[in-house]
Image (cartoon, rainbow over all chains, first blue to last red; front, side):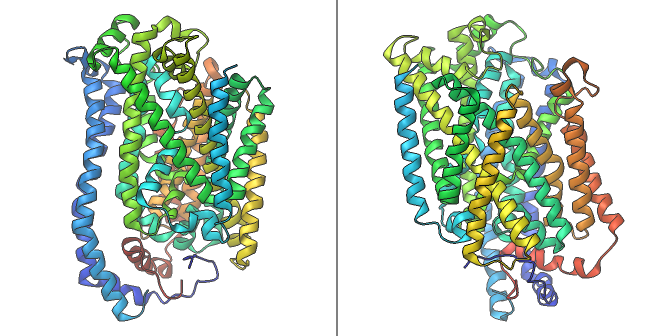
Length: 117
Length: 510
């Protein structure tokens, strides 16, 4: 069945959800997600925007030779590739091992209460 | 004229049409048409995402930019990978959990007010056309070059191909055309990588040293292409947030059964497309090493012929069977790339027109299922024809500039609205209109008075205005929300929104 969102379906009792959202299980899930996602966001925004700002305003710094013919700029570009792939792997593991079981607990509880599907 | 190119292109075309015929028989409902029945696996959607995200600008453009401008080309190539960090951590799973077929669905689910949906439709259509038209023009130029047709005939052929894929085969055909194209592109990339590195004893450092020796001491420094430092920052910001606002890529997350699969498909595309982007930097340096900077400048102003020329050289050079084979292969893959990307864009645009505008906004959702599919097919044809006409008019327009404009609008208008809809309790319809309005006007307006369009007479210094337009888009979203005032019923419902974003669960009523 397509889970369509339609204009005609406006009549929802918000209260049924508030219980779910205020439940301890849901809070645990949100806290777990925040603890892992926020540091990852800080890492990639700093890593990538740092590179972009240096490309604009630190051209001499990026031009320093550090690995034979390769300058710091290309090393940082390579670092951004590694950073992105590492974050992808770490997030995949954390979300599968840590977030998904917590989601399941919340879902099971909500289903048992009968108000949500 | 190259018989090998025609043969390879013919094979790819027949394969695509076969896929379309196969998909047509499996496309009966709206969920089939817009979302391939939500039945793609993570790997399939990962390949299709790679197909969508690696346009000709990536396949031909990044290599050419690196060969002509050194580090700036490599900076163009890393951004599209980092962009997926934003999508992975913030957007993919919430989007899959809240929407059905389009970004408009997400905005409508959150806001429940027609003006918010109208703003989302405008954003989607403008971004898609800004992305679609240059691809059509690029496709026209390429086909004209390969087959010798007139430019307008060439654009019409591209338009005809994409209309058939989309209107007949829907998302299933579009997805498999993307998958085939991604496999071909990665295969071509792998062969060129091995051949490029074989000539230097598999030591990429030789390529860096040689490129610098041949193209001058400043070649490996940033700033050869983007002279204004703020343009480098705009490039970074635009990529980091723009991808998450591009409707044709984001709608791919509706083709999978759940948020977990959506997440896994992002991991796939990050490794597939990311590896390809990294290779384009090697290809650019290899082109300078093997062909020399002078050869690359002749008849190759935007650098887009660099990869075909490199492939021809690595295959054995001009006039050899190996050289012709490689040139033909790369050219055929480039055409397949453009066709696949324009098909994805046409589908996403027709989703905004048929599902958001006609079904949800005009008819308030009261449209029979079979009629919805018909409307979707008709709107795909109409969108295809409009894009073809605009593509013909766009002859000679700088293709790369328009693509950057699309990404700038996506970052400045769509991204703030989408992200705040998902995560900010007080965000409301006023905010959607304010964010979309200010983001759209500032990005388009500043681009039009900048060097991309006015050249040396530019009033505004930056090619890519994201660094200013994005903060303005966010400001518009926040101010719009505050001006519209608080709506406690609306804010109360945010609990439900959050619950669904995080779990994918739906109310019995929705």
